[in-house]
Length: 183
Image: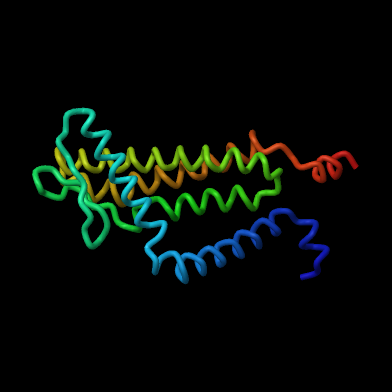
Protein backbone atom coordinates (compact mmCIF):
# COMPACT_ATOMS: atom_id res chain seq x y z
CA UNK A 1 0.00 0.00 0.00
CA UNK A 2 1.51 3.30 -1.00
CA UNK A 3 1.92 6.11 1.49
CA UNK A 4 -0.21 8.40 -0.71
CA UNK A 5 -3.23 6.07 -0.36
CA UNK A 6 -2.77 6.02 3.41
CA UNK A 7 -2.34 9.82 3.63
CA UNK A 8 -5.52 10.45 1.63
CA UNK A 9 -7.67 8.05 3.63
CA UNK A 10 -8.50 9.38 7.12
CA UNK A 11 -10.48 6.25 7.99
CA UNK A 12 -7.50 4.02 7.25
CA UNK A 13 -5.24 6.33 9.26
CA UNK A 14 -7.67 6.12 12.18
CA UNK A 15 -7.78 2.31 11.98
CA UNK A 16 -3.99 2.06 11.89
CA UNK A 17 -3.71 4.43 14.87
CA UNK A 18 -6.35 2.41 16.74
CA UNK A 19 -4.49 -0.85 16.16
CA UNK A 20 -1.18 0.69 17.25
CA UNK A 21 -2.80 2.24 20.33
CA UNK A 22 -4.48 -1.03 21.32
CA UNK A 23 -1.20 -2.92 20.96
CA UNK A 24 0.62 -0.26 22.98
CA UNK A 25 -2.06 -0.26 25.70
CA UNK A 26 -2.03 -4.06 25.85
CA UNK A 27 1.76 -4.08 26.20
CA UNK A 28 1.81 -1.41 28.92
CA UNK A 29 -1.11 -2.89 30.83
CA UNK A 30 -0.06 -6.54 30.67
CA UNK A 31 3.65 -5.80 31.04
CA UNK A 32 3.62 -3.21 33.82
CA UNK A 33 0.26 -2.18 35.26
CA UNK A 34 -1.46 -5.54 35.70
CA UNK A 35 1.43 -7.19 37.60
CA UNK A 36 1.48 -4.17 39.93
CA UNK A 37 -2.33 -4.34 40.19
CA UNK A 38 -2.45 -0.64 39.39
CA UNK A 39 -4.67 1.15 38.52
CA UNK A 40 -6.99 -1.87 38.90
CA UNK A 41 -6.95 -1.92 42.70
CA UNK A 42 -7.67 1.82 42.90
CA UNK A 43 -10.61 1.62 40.46
CA UNK A 44 -12.02 -1.47 42.16
CA UNK A 45 -11.93 0.22 45.56
CA UNK A 46 -13.45 3.56 44.54
CA UNK A 47 -16.15 1.86 42.47
CA UNK A 48 -17.10 -0.43 45.36
CA UNK A 49 -16.96 2.42 47.87
CA UNK A 50 -19.09 4.73 45.71
CA UNK A 51 -21.70 1.99 45.17
CA UNK A 52 -21.77 1.11 48.87
CA UNK A 53 -22.03 4.75 49.96
CA UNK A 54 -24.84 5.44 47.49
CA UNK A 55 -26.85 2.46 48.73
CA UNK A 56 -26.18 3.42 52.35
CA UNK A 57 -27.74 6.83 51.64
CA UNK A 58 -30.98 4.96 50.92
CA UNK A 59 -30.95 2.99 54.15
CA UNK A 60 -29.02 -0.13 53.22
CA UNK A 61 -26.44 -1.19 55.77
CA UNK A 62 -23.58 -2.31 53.56
CA UNK A 63 -19.84 -2.37 53.92
CA UNK A 64 -16.96 -3.29 51.66
CA UNK A 65 -14.08 -5.65 52.22
CA UNK A 66 -11.05 -6.63 50.18
CA UNK A 67 -11.19 -10.23 48.96
CA UNK A 68 -8.75 -12.19 46.81
CA UNK A 69 -10.73 -11.49 43.60
CA UNK A 70 -11.22 -7.75 44.28
CA UNK A 71 -13.55 -5.92 46.66
CA UNK A 72 -16.83 -7.30 47.96
CA UNK A 73 -19.95 -5.37 48.89
CA UNK A 74 -21.38 -7.09 51.95
CA UNK A 75 -24.61 -7.02 53.90
CA UNK A 76 -24.52 -8.68 57.32
CA UNK A 77 -21.17 -10.25 56.42
CA UNK A 78 -22.62 -11.92 53.31
CA UNK A 79 -20.99 -10.94 50.00
CA UNK A 80 -23.60 -9.56 47.64
CA UNK A 81 -21.30 -8.50 44.84
CA UNK A 82 -17.60 -8.73 44.10
CA UNK A 83 -16.00 -6.09 41.94
CA UNK A 84 -12.99 -7.62 40.22
CA UNK A 85 -10.40 -6.26 37.81
CA UNK A 86 -12.53 -7.13 34.78
CA UNK A 87 -15.44 -5.09 36.15
CA UNK A 88 -13.69 -1.93 37.32
CA UNK A 89 -14.19 -0.03 34.07
CA UNK A 90 -10.52 0.35 33.14
CA UNK A 91 -10.88 -1.30 29.72
CA UNK A 92 -13.87 0.89 28.87
CA UNK A 93 -12.14 4.05 30.14
CA UNK A 94 -9.05 3.23 28.08
CA UNK A 95 -11.09 2.49 24.96
CA UNK A 96 -12.97 5.77 25.25
CA UNK A 97 -9.90 7.90 25.98
CA UNK A 98 -7.88 6.18 23.26
CA UNK A 99 -10.48 6.77 20.57
CA UNK A 100 -10.78 10.44 21.50
CA UNK A 101 -6.99 10.82 21.58
CA UNK A 102 -6.40 9.37 18.12
CA UNK A 103 -9.20 11.37 16.49
CA UNK A 104 -7.56 14.34 14.75
CA UNK A 105 -8.67 17.35 16.76
CA UNK A 106 -7.07 19.99 18.93
CA UNK A 107 -5.41 18.77 22.12
CA UNK A 108 -7.18 21.30 24.39
CA UNK A 109 -10.56 19.91 23.34
CA UNK A 110 -9.38 16.41 24.17
CA UNK A 111 -8.03 17.54 27.55
CA UNK A 112 -11.49 18.90 28.41
CA UNK A 113 -13.66 16.13 26.91
CA UNK A 114 -11.79 13.05 28.13
CA UNK A 115 -12.17 13.75 31.88
CA UNK A 116 -15.84 14.63 31.43
CA UNK A 117 -16.44 11.40 29.50
CA UNK A 118 -14.45 9.35 32.02
CA UNK A 119 -16.46 10.82 34.89
CA UNK A 120 -19.70 9.95 33.09
CA UNK A 121 -18.51 6.39 32.44
CA UNK A 122 -17.35 6.02 36.05
CA UNK A 123 -20.77 7.15 37.32
CA UNK A 124 -22.43 4.71 34.92
CA UNK A 125 -20.21 1.93 36.28
CA UNK A 126 -21.16 2.87 39.85
CA UNK A 127 -24.83 2.80 38.81
CA UNK A 128 -24.18 -0.66 37.39
CA UNK A 129 -22.73 -1.78 40.74
CA UNK A 130 -25.73 -0.31 42.59
CA UNK A 131 -28.29 -2.02 40.35
CA UNK A 132 -26.44 -5.34 40.42
CA UNK A 133 -26.27 -5.17 44.22
CA UNK A 134 -30.01 -4.49 44.35
CA UNK A 135 -30.57 -7.40 41.95
CA UNK A 136 -28.65 -9.64 44.33
CA UNK A 137 -30.75 -8.44 47.28
CA UNK A 138 -34.19 -8.65 45.65
CA UNK A 139 -33.90 -10.88 42.56
CA UNK A 140 -30.67 -12.92 42.61
CA UNK A 141 -31.83 -14.84 39.55
CA UNK A 142 -31.63 -11.59 37.51
CA UNK A 143 -28.00 -10.90 38.43
CA UNK A 144 -26.21 -13.09 35.88
CA UNK A 145 -28.24 -11.91 32.88
CA UNK A 146 -27.95 -8.24 33.80
CA UNK A 147 -24.22 -8.55 34.50
CA UNK A 148 -23.44 -10.37 31.25
CA UNK A 149 -25.82 -8.69 28.82
CA UNK A 150 -27.74 -5.64 30.00
CA UNK A 151 -24.82 -3.72 31.40
CA UNK A 152 -22.31 -4.83 28.79
CA UNK A 153 -24.58 -3.45 26.09
CA UNK A 154 -25.35 -0.30 28.10
CA UNK A 155 -21.72 0.51 28.90
CA UNK A 156 -20.43 -0.03 25.36
CA UNK A 157 -23.41 1.89 23.94
CA UNK A 158 -22.48 4.76 26.26
CA UNK A 159 -18.86 4.69 25.01
CA UNK A 160 -20.10 4.68 21.43
CA UNK A 161 -22.56 7.49 22.17
CA UNK A 162 -19.88 9.63 23.81
CA UNK A 163 -17.54 9.03 20.93
CA UNK A 164 -20.23 9.93 18.37
CA UNK A 165 -21.00 13.09 20.35
CA UNK A 166 -17.30 13.90 20.23
CA UNK A 167 -16.90 13.21 16.51
CA UNK A 168 -20.11 14.83 15.28
CA UNK A 169 -20.74 17.74 17.66
CA UNK A 170 -17.87 18.68 19.92
CA UNK A 171 -14.64 18.15 18.04
CA UNK A 172 -13.85 21.38 16.20
CA UNK A 173 -11.55 20.70 13.26
CA UNK A 174 -7.90 21.58 13.66
CA UNK A 175 -6.47 24.56 11.79
CA UNK A 176 -4.83 22.24 9.24
CA UNK A 177 -8.13 20.50 8.53
CA UNK A 178 -9.89 23.87 8.14
CA UNK A 179 -7.26 24.90 5.56
CA UNK A 180 -7.70 21.62 3.68
CA UNK A 181 -11.46 22.02 3.66
CA UNK A 182 -11.23 25.51 2.15
CA UNK A 183 -8.55 24.63 -0.41
